[in-house]
Amino acid sequence: MKVYEDCITHSITTDSPFPIWYLMIDSGEIIGCAGLISNDFISRMDLWPWICALYIENNYRGKSLGKELLIRAKADAEKAGFNKVFLCTDHIGYYEKYGYTYIGDGYHPWGSSSRIYESNNQYNYLSN
Image (cartoon, rainbow, N blue to C red; front, side, top):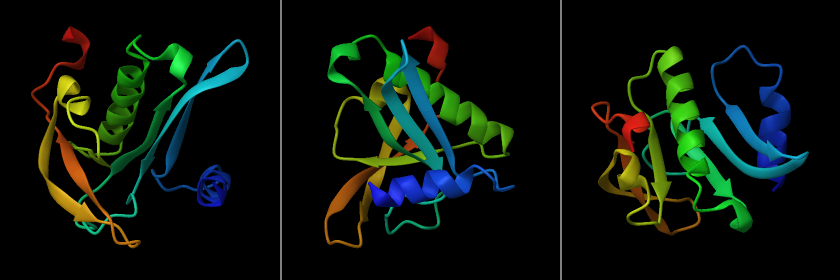
């Protein structure tokens, strides 16, 4: 938690295009979040930017809200000149619905690994 708090605090005043943090709010309550960052604690530092920390509160799941955060992050990456975004996860089946393709595994500093996905520019997010 401290890592994200520190990152968010310092991103507010930077001129860098990343990190960007997204909050989804309903009636004043945070119900979802995501980030667009330069690296998600993964060994593939040759790939970037990364969508990270995608989360939707349980009561709000099943309404395609995560999709909305993915669309926004990808659009902001494109505005910054990047035609792809990446993410790492242990989930199988979720990101594929939104045009992400598994490209291999990456390794975290704490010893575990995660699946790496790349956005597919041919996918029309608004059609699904």
